[in-house]
Amino acid sequence: MSKHMSAVPSPLNWPGYYAQQLKTCKDSRLKAFFEAGLVAPDTPLNEVPFVALDFETTGLNPKDHGIVSVGIVPFTLSRIRCKQASHFIVNPRQTLLPKSITFHGITHSDVQAAPDLEDVLHDFLPKLANQVVVVHYRQIEREFLNLALMARIQEQLFFPVIDTMTLEEHILKKQRTMFERLIGQKPNQSLRLPDIRERYGLPRYHLHHAMTDALATAEVLQAQVAYHFDGQTPISELWC
Image 1: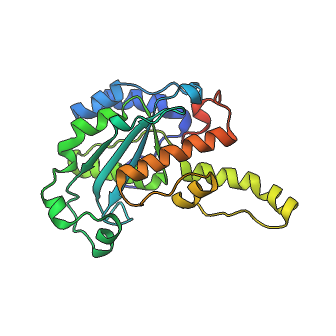
Image 2: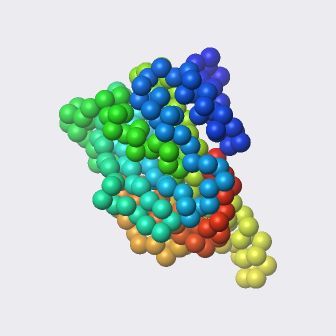
Image 3: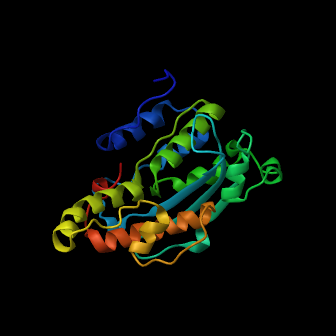
């Protein structure tokens, strides 16, 4: 591991991590983020302020690729706040690959005219502050953001997330034995966002637009909790 990087904190250490980062980080935008604090680990799910986060990128390797767009959708278990949703196109500092353009539709001219991620941090980070971030596959959002900040301001940023992909994987493991016993076959095991949405009867959306995917992720978490969890479950049991 690079001397400039530290491991993602254990869920049990998130409050301590925030306190330590507030003391040591130098960037004023990061200080404001950590100063806003952390949702208390014992907060019931039905009282938690969530924000769904999605990135579109130039590729899938955070060490070699960059962020081209950011989608942010605030919500609770009972309401999605679409009017407060945000979408940013940013310059990734990496060359767009033809394959990635095909996926997300963001072109070279789009990113050339866009600000650098560092230039929108003052708008972007406050939208995540003192919220529980919800993503689908945390290795994308958490790792891409952390490495992007390391490249720009030489500081790291981690925060607890609920990963709807990991959550669904745990749910399916619990269901698998029951399905095999009752009907003699395994349930649909796909962890792709559209396949998970189909299992919960959620409508199909056009994929690979950061704000739409963030909205889709928010709806998936609402469905997962409604079907499989008690609203009084502490947030610390789901975040990682």
